[in-house]
Image (cartoon, rainbow, N blue to C red):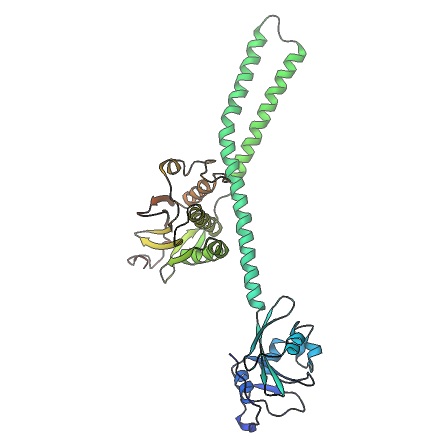
Length: 386
């Protein structure tokens, strides 16, 4: 936090050699400004009467190279939108004012009066924070897109499986009917025979469409790679920070300090983890406990890494548990009933397993077991997560 000080001169030998660059016509900057500059802060002095920039640190010049030679607030204002208004408003006594400058509030700032002569302005670059937030939003959008793609694929596979049998039976019945009618006297006339042939052709066309759908969905196999399951859990949890705040749920991570390596498709496994966490949050919203808590645990048991997603929500009754992994069966009013079915398919594609247990008091815990990646150090004894 900035604190005000009076302007005083210092000998040239006392000034840190990399601290700042002076504008012409100004005395040596005050000790506080030099101290901040020596720590690498982006600070500048602005004359309160003339609104001229009389001094700027090296970090200021590096942060704003296009304004390195800016001499007044008028030049700064288009890039630090809100600065002129902040100077007009002044500072509340000796306390620094915290500001957000720029069109997108990409600059954090502190403004403090140094006596009656100068303003001391310290800038913080928040653009990287904005870029990080944008990357997180992009990751969420990509995950949502992937979820939709996989959901459509799972639905197509299920529908293909369910429709293939009645379509085949219809085709066989039509062929049998055509054969029996062909043996009758008198035989079918031309229009009736042509109509029957068209019916058989249409049924067979539908069968070929179903076959193509099944071939398309079966072609999407996981892209196996080396994955740190602990890091993937942290990244997946960060994607749900807004959902956690909306549910007022407390997130608890119980993860090993080191990496837990598995082999698999990162997108598929992240989809499984995010879906299980969202289901847990939905369960806590359906029957809110006094202290909503979502706990993610990762442990190693033998040659298997086990992820546990535990909530203290409404839990599962016997009927819901029996239909848990059945496609198109959902306990949610707006659910499609394919989420857990997809999750189980993805886990099994990784030679893993997915199951659930009821908690002793409230809620349920879903378990995902995946084979540990065999490495030269895998002969070491596996330890459980704290």
